[in-house]
Length: 185
View (spheres, one colour):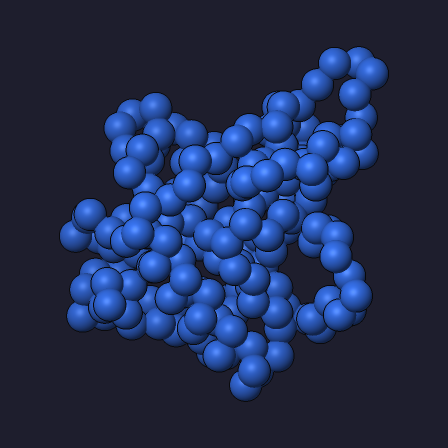
């Protein structure tokens, strides 16, 4: 971001983007579309959160919803699925969400592997926690450790869930859980 570009300018530009993007280090960073398998997994996480929302309250968000935050190097997130405690937004509110979600799910895509990708994922996770997110899922459909659940209070010590187990997102989504096997259906 140059000296004359403000966060408000970048957010306005983000609204005009045709596709998925985030504001990182003063730039709008485009994100490539996801593949079938990770897209379906993200959709299943959202569907499970949406069903939970109807029972317990809160607000589930699908892929490509923008969350505006105020961090030194990041101004937005666009998780693959997210959940916020508290009331749902006004039906007429078309703006981005203000603040970080309580829970964010990031499903790895085809290009989310290797040392550079691992570093980028770790930085983004740290940004989530700095912005106030309580729990971040790192979903890796190619690994034996399918869901790594990172919590703000222990950001470097994930709880790991494999096929045949049920993953949760405490304390961000109290009482919600999801079978890891559902990610592969």
